[in-house]
Every structure is written in C-alpha cells, then in structure tokens.
Image (cartoon, rainbow, N blue to C red; front, side, top):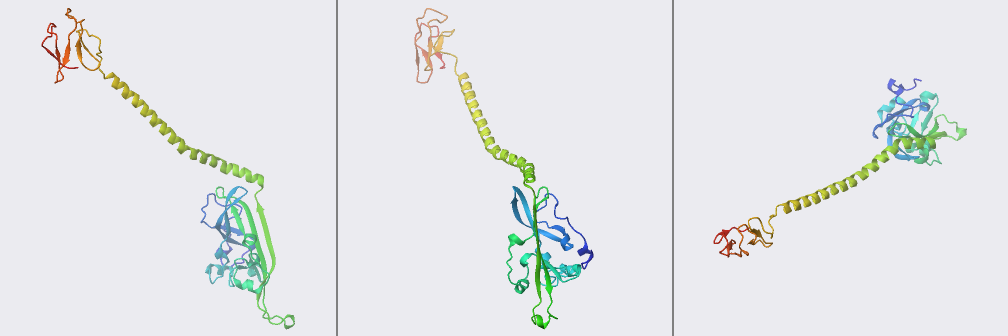
Length: 298
C-alpha cells in the first residue's frame, strides 16, 4: 500500500522484529516493519534485561519517530502535522485515525488534557523487544498500541452539547506479548553461557596457580644453588690432614705444619715446629735433614 508522502516512507526497511544482525552494537538502531502501521519504525537500545536467564538488549520505538514534523521534518512524509506522540493514519485508513502508545504514553500534553481517566505506565504500556545480542534473535516482545479517533467540533450540532473542543478520543488498545518457552530458554543459555562460564573459571584460577608455580620454581632454584655452592666450597678445601704424608710433612687442624717420624729419612722421633711472627714455620730439631730451612706455611 502506497499511502505515505514519499518513496522512502513507503519503502519496507528492516526485519519483522524476530531477528537482527548478530553481535549488533548497543548504539545501533534497528528498523522494524510494523504491519499494523503500514510502515517501518526505528527502534533504539533502551537498556539491558535478563529474561529467563538470557542476557538481552531491550529496544523501544525511537522517540524521534513519534515527533511532529515541526520538531522532526522527516516525519512530514508521514503527515505528522499535529502534536507529538501519535501517528497519523488518516491517509491509510480513510478516516481520522491516530495510533499511539496506550494512555498517550510519551505523547504531548495536548492529548492528555482532552481526555480524563488516563494513567500511563511505562512498564505496562510501552512496546519493547528483547534481543539476545550474540545470536541477534528476539526472545521476547511486548506490543502495546492504542487507536484513537479525532473528533472535529466545527460542525458539532448545538443540540448535542454545543461548542466542544477538538480532541483525539481513545477507542481501543491492542496488547500482545510473547516470550521464548522455558525449555528453549534453557537450551539457549546452556549453548551460550556454559562454555563462557568455564573459560572465566579457568581464567580466574590461572593467575594464582601460575604465581604459585613461579614461586615454587624460584624456591627450588635457590635450594639447588645453595647445595651447589656448598659442594664447591667443600671441594676447594686442602686435602692434607693431620696424618703424615709421604715426605713426612702434615698439617694440623689449626693450620700448623708438622713433620712426622715416619718421614723417609728415618731416625727422628718427631720434628718440632714453631710458627714465627711472620707466619712461616721453622724446624726446631736440627738433627732433621731440613734443619735450618724455612718451610712455607700451608
């Protein structure tokens, strides 16, 4: 049906609202063709909501789509020449019909001043799409619309009340809600979030476990170096002991040199030694073959 004022306005844009592009950014608008309104409407991200365990992005009708042409000139193609908040369907329906949110939610005060008994509630009267962002599937939807009729009083009979104000009078509301079944919601959550939860759990434990392994490795390295250094120190000590050597010269534990009687020249009972002030060792027993010679300290 070609009932709008331009080719662009009569073009079907977007999806039917059941599915969108996967991984769509929050700030991107989604065009939805609404058959009841014979036109496409832009939907914008309005928040996040958890529906049956599923993380969803919520989309509602963009505010500028309901503005008058004075505030949004693009809406002149839809004959939006009255106050903001109601879509003029007169050219499509053939009668002065206007469609808005129930109880004139988000509409101009001009509408609410003409009618009494209205109580708009966003939770009850807004149109909302619940879109799972990873797959782009709509897992829940609420459509709430109100149909109103414009009453003109220019030719209002005097016998029916005299001069009355023009008004857009509500006639009926249309409400539809549909959500993903519980069984399908469980299948979707298991498919989407179980691998992610497992990865997050592994990531949360990876850092502390890695730190412990690094600390254990450093500690093991320190222990190994300690024993290696200790082994090298022991290997560097003199092999001479207080026992006699082949030439009869030995070393006592305190570092003094002695000559043993088992020396190769024989005949000596024991060579007496003394440490001089300079640190050298002199042979005391002159009967020993090295009498008078000085022996370097060990």
